[in-house]
Image 1 (cartoon, helix red, strand yellow):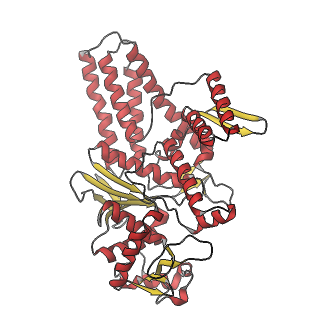
Image 2 (tube, helix red, strand yellow):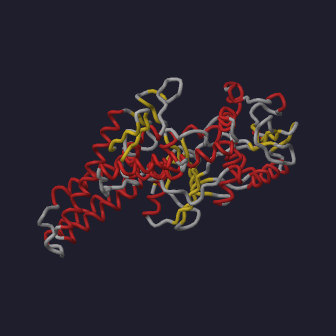
Image 3 (spheres, helix red, strand yellow):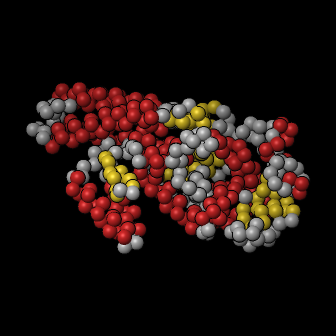
Length: 468
C-alpha cells in the first residue's frame, strides 16, 4: 500500500510502527457553528482511509478531536449571552448528527481539548525545562529556532518566513525573543474561560492541544497524522516542533492532507455568500450523495462543488443502489439454490473488480478509480443477474457489492419508504412534543424522519416535508 507523504513529497510504502495496527490522528473541527462542507471533506476522506485499513484486517486506533475552546467559540458565546461550554456542547451534538448522516464512523476516541488541559500544562512544562519554551508576563512561547528541523513538513525556510510573512507576527510580538515564536499558553481576558497554570490563569494555544491529545490516546509516535491542506502550516508544522522537542522522537511517520473544496469554481467564504453547511445540504439531498460526491475525486485533487455535480452524484449513487435492490429482489424470488457451472465461471470474473478496487485504494487511496471499479461491478451485475440466476450466485454478487461500497461508507440497502400517513403522524407527534417543550423528543423524531429520507421545513404556515 502506497501513501503520499507530505513530509517527503512522494508516495511511500506503508509500514506500520506495530504490525497489524494503525495509529491515526485526524484534526477535528472547532465547534462554534454547524460544520460546513469544507469540514466534511477530511471527515469523509479519512473515514474511508480508516475503513480500508479495517477491510484489510488492521486494528485501527482512530482519534479525532473537537476543539472546544477557541476565540470563535468565545465570540459566539458572548454574542448569545451564554457560556462557551454551552456553545461547544451544542455544536458537538450537531456535528455528530451530520457525521451520522454522512455515515462517518465515530472515532475510537473523540477527545475534547477542555478535558485535556492538565496534560497540555505538563507538556509545556517539559518544553520549558528542555529550553524549547519560555514565559513572559504569563504567556508561554515556543522557541521556533531552537527546533532545528522547523519547516520540514511545509518545506518553508525560517528566514524567508521572517522577511516575507508579516501575518505570522501575532499579538504580543514585542515580548517574543523572535517574531516567529508561537504561543503555547496565554493569560485569560475578561469573560473568557480559563484554567490555573504555573504561569497564569489562562488557556492553551491551539497547536499544543493536538500534540497532547495525540500523545495521550495514541502514544509518542503515531503512524498517520491527517487533515486538510490548510493545516500544513502553521498548525501541523508547530505540532511536529512541540511533539518532537518534548518527546525526543519522530512524531508521525506519514502526513496525509486533502485538497481544498471550491464552490462553483470559487473559494468558499461567507463574504462571497457561497458558504454551505452540511445541514443546508441535507435539506436538498441525502447526505450519502454528499459522501459519494466527495469520493468521486482523489483526495489530493481540488474538488469543485456545484448543483450539477451533486445531481450527477445522486444519479450515480442511485445506479449502485438500484443494482443492490435488484439483487435483493432476485434473491427473494430465486428458483434454484446452488451455482451452475456457467455461474461458477462467471463468478471468477467478480474477483477482477475486487482486485481493481483494491489496487485503486492501495495507490494512495484513489477513491475515484475505486468508484469506477464499483460501477464496473454494477454493470456486470446488471448484465449477468436475472430471474434464472441461482441464490448462491446472486448472494456472491451482493456480498461483493456490499463489501466494496461499505469500504467507501456508502449504504446501498434501500430504506423502506414510509407511507404519507405515517410521516404525517410522526410530524403531529413532533409538533405535540414541541408544544410540551420536549425538544429532545422533537429532535429525535426529526432525526428519525431524516434517516428515512424525509426532510422537514418549519414555516409560518406549518411544517412542510419532502422526500430526499
